[in-house]
Image (cartoon, rainbow, N blue to C red):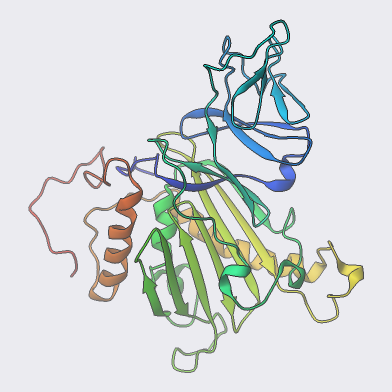
Length: 351
């Protein structure tokens, strides 16, 4: 991928793990937004995410640090830090150091995932991570689906992909036919970019011979900022998906994809609780394969600004890119590609 002109430090919620990856008492080392971080789960089950270095003498808390009750203990001198990153104990002093604090990040556990709020200016969250069941309002719960972890997930670390590419994919009606082999291009029934959480719905089918005029299936998506999206498919294979792209550094991101497959009739009794059946694995594999087809494109894509849009593409792409600007600390891109900056005359936005 050519280096993107888009900031790799957008504001929003970003997935840093699946919940089962961080057990009680575990300290999980990671790097996001050019920062070394640790995630840890206290005895009560609360997950916290910190910058990785102890404020005392800079020991990395992910290498030898341990959880003691509700605190994270530094391996170097035993200083203890609570879930807000505040020092609560120096074992060889009578009082903690109240003047120093490790940077901590707002954390939400939802949809089997751990999300952190990132904002370069330290602002508090002003929108939420959507619930993949409750927020679609159809009465479905996780009990109606096979458990997605670990069999219905995809993890691709360190790819040269920007979170906005995945969001643009949602308004790119034309790619469905050429990348995913749909018999017709979908028709969008909703584009709502009125706030930091956007909504995009469209009709689509994957059955050979299906037509737009007779389509009885589609997709609804809720996009919370650039890092978090949940989708619901209706009228076809009952599935819900959660793609998540989290920047690692100035060029790369980690990509995660989680798939919930609706339970097959006869596989919804108590004996199937917590069980992923062969049917569930097979159907999840089909959905993941389609997402992998997108990844292959994104990983080698150059961000075009302005893009050469057709008339039919203009409305969706323009609305999404205007919406996306709000999440960038620098107000968005300055050019199409810093390695090949656009320097020609101003052109029309569409053909």
